[in-house]
Each structure stands twice: as C-alpha cells, then as structure tokens.
Image 1 (cartoon, rainbow, N blue to C red):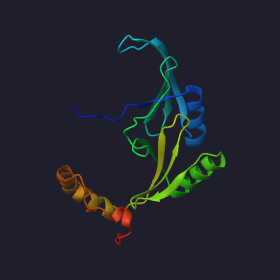
Image 2: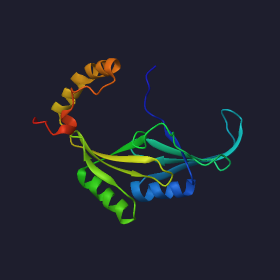
Image 3: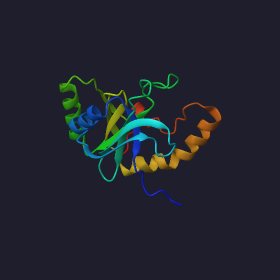
Image 4: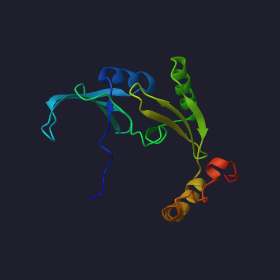
Length: 179
C-alpha cells in the first residue's frame, strides 16, 4: 500500500462559523463541506459536533470540529507553543508579505518573516489558538540536494546524541554561500 495523499487534517475549533469565516477572510480557503451529528459515527458516543471542511488548495483539505458539550479547548502543557503548527505554502514572497499586512491590519499579531534559507515564513494564531505558518519557498536545487544528502546522517547522529547535528546549520547561521 502507498498513501495517495492526505485526505484531510482535522483540528478542534472553538466556533465553527467563526473558523470558516476567518480562514476564508485571511487565507482565502473556501468552505466546502459541513457534517453534523449527535453521535460519533466511529465510536457511537453521544457527542454532538459540527465538522467543517475548507479547501486548502491542490486537493488539500483542512477540517475542524466544534464540540459544544466538551470542556474548553486546551493545549498540551508539556509542548512549547511554537512546536505544533500547520505550515501552508504560498506562491511568492509578495503573497507572504501581503498576507502579513492583511493580518496585521486587523490587529492579528504576526511574527516574521523568519528566514530559513530554503523558505521564509510568518507565524500567527487562528481564533482557536492554533499556530499557523505561511511559507514562501526560496531554496535552490543545490540546497535541496545538500539537505537530501545529509538527512540520514543528521537523523542517526540525533538518535544517539539528542543534540542538534551541524550538517545543515547553514540554513540559519547565514553561512550558505552557494547558488
């Protein structure tokens, strides 16, 4: 078996309508489907929900569940806020900066752009507290080749030492001088 693609990724949200409207306004995602039940189909648990689906482009679907009878949403207290996030690619630096301006114009705090050498990113939170990253690719074929050649050495070194291998430090230290 080989996976064909991600069918959808689902997160919880505080308010389904607010979520659909926010993702439409700031990320141009169209609302494509709503499913609502009073019982969870897989477990048969009595748990009313609204499940909304958004078009994230190129066959990608982002979905959310509003669960009104469950305790308020929380975060994993043992995982730093920056770790769990959804990264979405945009077509250019111009699109990235336009998105940043649109978000900030409505009072949404945006971090970045952060230069990762192979892409630049901005970071912000949706109304439910999910961290989002928008990325514009800036890498070259040479960079991709360098990273591909180092990936297993990096992973194997990490598995033993649990310290950051230095094979690709050029991504963040400014030392990359190639094309």
